[in-house]
Every structure is written in structure tokens, then in C-alpha cells.
Amino acid sequence: MTISSNGGGPKHSLDSDHTRLHELGYKQELNRDLSVLSNFAISFSIISVLTGVNTLYSTGLNFGGPVSLVYGWVIAGTFTMFVGLSMAEICSSYPTSGGLYYWSAKLAGQSWAPFASWITGWFNVVGQWAVSASVNFSLAQLIQVMVLLSTGGMNGGGYKASKYIVIAIHGGLLLSQAILNSLPISLLSFLGQIAAAWNIFGVFLLMILVPLVAKERASAKFVFTHFNTDNGVGIHSEVYIFVLGLLMSQYTLLGYDASANMTEETKNAAKNGPKGIILAIGISLLAGWCYILGITFVVTDIPHLLSQDNDAGGYAIAQMFYDVFKTRYGSGVGGIVCLGVIAVAIFFCGMSSMTSNSRMAYAFSRDGAMPFSAFWHKVNKQEVPINAVWASALIAFCMALTSLGSIVAFQAMTSIATIGLYIAYALPSFLRVTLARKSFVPGPFNLGRYGVVVGWISVLWVATISVLFSLPVAYPITHKNLNYTPVAVGGLLVLVVSSWIFGARHWFKGPITNIGHSSSGDA
Image (cartoon, rainbow, N blue to C red; front, side, top):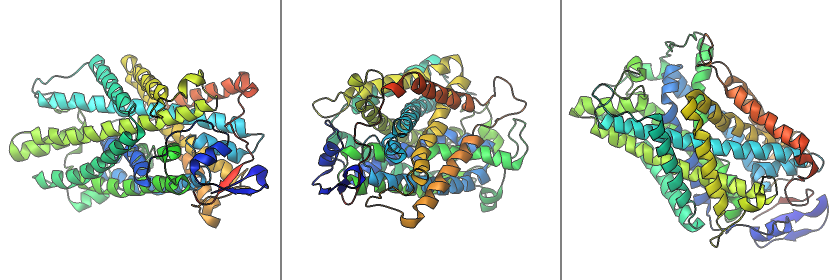
């Protein structure tokens, strides 16, 4: 790896990425114990096909059905790979745990660096907290459905937990994940590899087992050509319906910035960080499409799976698995066990998400961007940012408290997880293809002459989904079905920009480093 001081000074050959961080001005860093496998495992576990697909499979069924599920995954996945490739190229040049916001500072140039990193950093860290909140809340809901089915289901007098019990389960999950994230990075790395293996195992187990057990299966024609327009929410345009069905795919393909946030704990970071991003997306795309195909061949009655009066209370995947085993064996216990496989994968997703967002908060506070920064970036004897771990867990819990007042309010909060994070993903790419188009110095992994084209495609895709996912999801529009995504994301933008104008612009100078530095070469 080489570092060029002030754009044209002498280049220094560095023995390690630790040395590079000291050259960049960072006096405190984390242990560099992660291999490329461990780096990949964390991102792969956060993307977690079993988390996103199962949580929003009902949405895909309702808006377009099999066509939206099967082809929407391919479309969203293809463009997500463009986003990931652009991020990977930048990550190779700037492998620090600050990730996106650090990249924005480096790419924006000295005059715009503080503002660019401020906007990117806050969208990234709040988006990551929203991911932790939404993932664990969805797991709490799944656990509630598993208990419901285990006790007889909606039609058999089963126990349906109150919203207060669900939020208590959510808190317990965050507590256990915070404890695990307080372990040394070597142990956390091992858990991350188990999580990745569990996700792969779970995907292939369920995509093979469930169709094999099913007595009745859909035809290939149904899976590849049936388009469901009976959504019950007053939307009749097939294009509009398909767009809303994309939400499942795009929500699932999220969180791969974790590979960037973990680079300061990754060996050979300038090469392995980018590899982690690309591998996580690529393997998730393949595994996810296979999984969607496998379980969609079991769909024979869409209205039944989506009905609020079924035994699972409208939770499509749970009802599907339950029906498959009950029809074959007279008992739905096997289906509940399959849901347990999904629940473990979602738990690992939440654990890995907390690993990532605590590192992001650590890096952002290390540069003085967060209130009480000295508290946030404190590390313990095992070099774990312990305060960032527990504070992140607390914030994710507080975000979920909005569900007690209104599930619509909570959905608006978690919409930041999708749109907010993708905005943070796109900002460095936008700066790479505009302000830094000629000055960008690529690292070991680079796209060559295609870098600018890939960057523009990723930026335009993020702009497109930001608009599409802000559209109404039901007609006529009422306060109960209003899509609050633009309100939530717009509100965050107003808060971040206002805080910059009225305060941060006077003291925040961007990452603590000479903005003129650039890096390339081998790590």
C-alpha cells in the first residue's frame, strides 16, 4: 500500500494497515484479526436472505405475486451489484472503519469534505440503527407467530402476544446481541462465520425440504408467469404493483457496507474489504433466488396465505410452512421447526448488524461528529468499542417503542433503514463520478475505465428506488395507510442539514486526517 501526501509528495511503503491509520492521523484503532471470510460473513449475515425474504414475502405476494418475487429479485439484485461494485472500488482506496462518510470526505475535496462526510455519516449511522430495530422487531413478531401456532393458531384458541410482550421480546433480543458484541473480536468473528454458514444451510434446507414435504405444488407456469393484481388496496396498474413488489428484494439486499465498516479489523483490508462486499452480494443473490423459487413452488392459494383469519394471522411464510407439514403429517410442528431455522438466521442478522453499526458509531465519534464523542469511541481491554455497542442497542430499542403508539409510525421509522442507507451508499459514488472523477486514485481493486459508468448506474438506481418507495401503497389514501417514508427520510435530512447550518459547520472538520492524503497499492 502507498500513501501520497498532499497529492504529490513522496510515497511510503507501509508494512501494515495499522501503520496506514497512524499516517492518516488515527491514534486509536481496533485489533486487525478478521480474515476475508470473516469480513464477508458479517455482511452476508446482515443481508441474510432468510431475514429479508421471509419478513416481506407477504408484501411480494400481495403486490404482483410470483412474477414480482422471481423477477423483482433479479432486477433489484443486478442493480444492487452495481452499487456494491462502486462501493468496493472506493473501499479499496480508503479502507477505514469510517467507511462511507470517510469516503465522502476524501472524494469531495477539502472545501466540501466536512459537509459531505456529515451528511453521509448521519444517514449511515441512523440507517444502521434502524436496521437493528427493524430486524429484531421482525424476529419478535416471528417468535410471537411461532408461539401462536404452537398453541393452536388463530382458529384454535392459540395465544397471541400483546404489543407490549412483543416489544419486551425485542428488548431481550437486543440485550443478548449486545452481550455477544461485547466479546473479543476473535470470538465475534467465529460467531459471524457460524452465522454465514447457518444462513447458507437454512436457505438450502428449506428450499429443498418444504417443496418435498408439500403434497400439492404450483406449476412452473404459475411460478414464472402468474401476476397477482388482487391486492385489496385499490391499486390496479400492473407496473405500479410490480414496483411495490420490489420492496422485498431491495430491503433484503442491504447492509453490505458492514465489510467497509470492519476493514480496520480486517487483514489486507484494501483487498479483502472489497472482496467481502462483492462476495456478500453475489452469494446472497444466488442463494436468495434459489430460495424464492423453492418456496414459491409451494404457493397454491395466495388469498389464503395473506388472510388475516388464517392460523398465522396473515404471516404468509409461517402459514405456508404450517400448512405443508399439517397436510402431510396431520401436525404443523415440522413447519414451526422450519420457522425456528429462520428465527436463528434473523437473530444472527441482528447480531451482525449491531457489530457493524457499533463500529460505524465508533468511527464517527472518533472524528468528533457525535454528541458525547468521548463516550462513544471508548474501547475496552479487548479493543471492543463497548460503549458504542450498548448505546446502539439502546437506540434500536427506543426506535421500536414507536410501535406501541402506531405500527405505521414504526414502519416510517424503519423506512430509513432502506432509503436512508441507500442514500448513504450513493453519496460517495456520486462524489466519485463528479468532484473526484479525475483525482480519484484507485486501490488494488478497481473497475478501470468502467468505474465512472458503474458509479453513475448505482447513483441513478438509488435515486429511482428513493422515489418509488415513497409512493402511496394504498388508495384512497388515509392516515392509516399513508406511506410515511418521505416524511421520515425528509425529516432526517432536515435535522441533519439544520444541525450542520446552525452548529456543526463551525466545528466539524471531517475525519481527523489530512484530506489531501490518498492511498493505493497493496495492503
